[in-house]
Image (cartoon, rainbow over all chains, first blue to last red; front, side):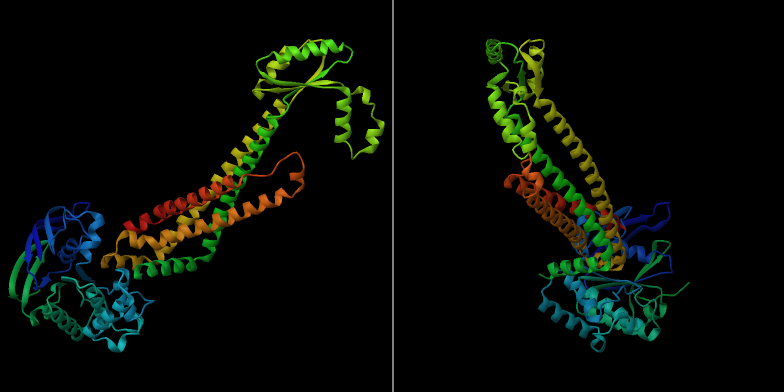
Length: 227
Length: 291
C-alpha cells in the first residue's frame, strides 16, 4: 500500500525534514506515526500525497509511483487518498451536509448519489444531529468528524491523518480514534500522525517513531514514551 | 452535470462578490471593442469610397479657349496615346454650363449672376492607375492648350493618409483601453481567488484538477469579455444603421458596408474577446493556483 525507499526531504536553505527513511505499510494496517513536534511527521505525510516533493528516494502509494508522478496527475493520487489535517479546514458558509457533499460535488457525482452517500457518511461519523449546523455551531470534535467524513467521500484506500486530535480534549480524542478504528476495520489503511502518548498507548498498534527526520523505531503493538 | 453546476454556480458567485469591478471590466472591454469595431468599419467605408472615386475621373484638364479647337483635339489624341490613360472625354463649354446648373440648382441667385462664358471646356481623364496622375501633369506642363490642371489623386491620397492616421490613433487608444481591461480582469480574478483560497486548498486536497479549480474563474473572465464585446458590437451596428440615414450619408460619402464584412468583423471580435478572456484568466489565477 505504502512503500518508502531511502526517502529524504531537504528544504531550500538546507534544513533536513526527512532523512533516508524507508518504511512499508500493508493494506488494511493502522499505523501511528509518532514523535515530537518538528520530528518530521507532517513532512512524512505530505510526501505521501505529494504536497512535498522528495529530494531523494522512491515513494509508492496505492500502486502509484509518487516520485515520478507528473504534477498534472497529482489529483489522481489524491482521489485515492483521504487527508485529514489538524485544522479541520471546513467551509464556514456550508453546513455539515454541504461540507461533506462538497467532495462529491467537485468530483462530478450525480445529485442522488451525493445525497445517499453524504447521508451514509453522516451516519458513519454519527453527526445526524448536526447535519444542518454550520462549522461555527460545531465543537472541535464534531468539526474533525466532518473533516474525516469528507476525506472518506471518495472511498479512499488510505486515510492520512495529521494530528486530528491535536486540538481536542482526551475524551473527544478517544471518540475520534474509535471512529478511525471503525474505518480501518472496514478495510481502509490508516496512517495517523500524533504526539499524544495517551492515545497511542491506549490502543496497541504499529508505531513508527520519528526523530529529526529519521525513523528511530518501527514496532508492532508498540507504545510511545515521550522522551 | 454536477461539475457543470458547480462551475456555473461559482462563476455567478464570484461575479456577485465584486460587482463594481465586474462592471468596470465590462465597460473597459466595451469601450475598447467599440473603438476597434467603429475604426475598422470607418476604414472600410473610406476604402469603399476611395475605390469608387478612383474608378471615376482622375485628372481634369481645363482648356484654354483662346487656342483653336484643333489644338484641343490634338491634345486629346496625344493624351489618348499615353499608356497610363484609359479614357479621355471632351467636355464642352455647354456641357460645363449644364453641369454647373445641375450642381447649383438650389442657388438660383448664383445661377442668375454667373457668366457661363467663363466656364472652360475640359478634358476629363481616367487613368489605368490613379497614382500616375503626376506623370500626366508633368507631360502637360507648358502646353499652350492647357489653362489649368486639377487632380483628384492628391485629395484621395490626403484622405487615405488621414484615415490611416485615424486608424492608427484609434487602434493605439483601443489597445491602451484593452490593456486596462486586461489588468482589471486579472485584478478581479485575483480578488476572487484570494477570497476563495481556503476552498481552493480543500479542493486540491480532495483531488480536484487544476483545470476544474480554474474553470469558474476562466468562465468569469470569458463572460465579462463577451458581454463587453457584444454590447460594443451592438452599439457599432446601431451607429452604422443610424449613419446610413444621416446627413453624412446624403453627402459624397457612401455609408454602406457589406453585411459580409460586418458579420466577419463581429465574429472576429467575439472570437478575439473569447481568447482575451481565456488568456487573462490564465494569467490572473496562475499564481493563486501555484501557491
